[in-house]
Length: 162
Ligand code: FES
Image (cartoon, rainbow, N blue to C red; front, side):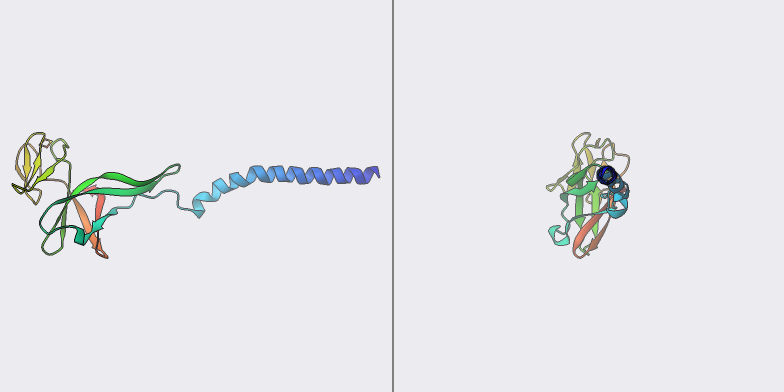
């Protein structure tokens, strides 16, 4: 009788011990294998969609925000505004995309429709519709980005400025 009671208690003890160990190990194993089973980092793609080609009028610069979603090991950022760009659709539907930041000291550049020029308010920098410096202290023309159009959507290579 005493022996069967001990055996019973030993079995119960092993079951409880095993459950406890499994309860501790399961989350640790899950944490270790999680990166292999699921994408844990994104938002580092080169080209980001900025709108439909038809949204951009031919010959008139349009300023658009560049937004992306990003996830790192701990956080998810949805609709993160990365910055903005000036987009000029050409007659042949090719695109020129410029940074909104001045190549002099980084102030925001605006398009002045009345004079058909990009103007930087900080030190009176002036650029033509192709981003070329007309006057002011900027050492170069406006920074630009590579673009591509797929399925009528415009993408900009926002990571690589030229
Ligand atoms: S920052 Fe634009 S001209 Fe100086």
